Length: 344
Image 1 (spheres, rainbow, N blue to C red):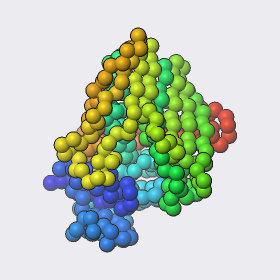
Image 2 (spheres, rainbow, N blue to C red):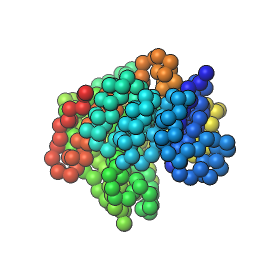
Image 3 (spheres, one colour):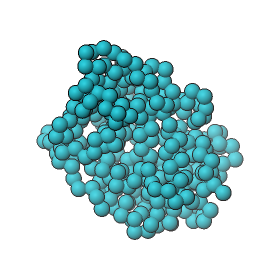
C-alpha cells in the first residue's frame, strides 16, 4: 500500500513542484490538499479531498506524510503541529525563517522520532549533477573558483509574498537556499561568508539582487542571484588547476513542470547543449549532460518511510540555514561572518 500524503498549500510551489512529483512516485499517494481555495484545486485535481485547515489531516490516522508548501513565515508553526501529530514531514525550503526556528523544529522531530526533510530538489538539477561528477572525477584538477548564478529578467515587481516586504521574502530567502545547498554538497562548510544585497528594480521593496562569497582555505565560491539579467549569464563557472567548466542556461525541469510535462516522460530533465570543458591549453571540449532527476527526492522520501536512510537530513538543512543567515548578517553589517553553530 502506498503512503498517503497531505499537501499543505496550493500556491506556485505546491502545484508546480510537489503535486506532480508526489504523483510520479508509486509508493506515495496524494490523498488530500489543505487550501482555502477548493475550486482552484478541483479545477486541476478533480475529486481531490480538500480541507480548509490542517487540523483535519493531522487528525486523520490514514495520512502518513505532511508536505508543507506555504509561505516561509508559516513553516515553523505548521511543522510543529505536524510533528505533534506524529506525522512524517517534508518542508519546502527554507525549513524556517531563522536558524533558531529551524533548530527547534529539528529538535522537536528528533524527540518525537518523526521523519523530517526539506525540499532541496536542486541537488538533482542535471547541470549540477554533471558539474559534481566532473569535479569528483578530477576533470579540471583541484577546484579554486566556483561560481553559481540564478539570474532572471523580471523587471516588474509583482504583488506576491516573495516580493513584498516581510519575514522570509526577497530573492536571497527564495533562491539562496538552493545556491547554498549545492555549494555545501560539493565543498562542505565555509570558514566565513561575505555578502551584499540590493533592491535594484524600480519599486523593489525587498532584495532582488544578492551576491555572496563563501571563503574556504584554498577555494572561493561565488553565489549570485539577480532579477535584471536580460541576456542571461553562465549558470556555473568552475576553474581548477587543470581547466574550467562553463555552463549556460537553467536546468529545464521547472519549465517542463510548468508546461505540464509529466516527470519521467521522454525528454524529461534533458538539455541538448553540453557543458563546455576547457583544458590546460584552452581547448574547448563538450561534456555531455547528465539528465536532471527531481523525482529522486520523493523516491528517497518513500524509501525512508520504508526504512532507508534519509537523503536530505535535518542537519544538512540546518547547515544551509546557518550559511543563509550568516550571509544576510554580512550583507546587513558589511562585515564578514563566521558560520553560527547549527548542530543539535
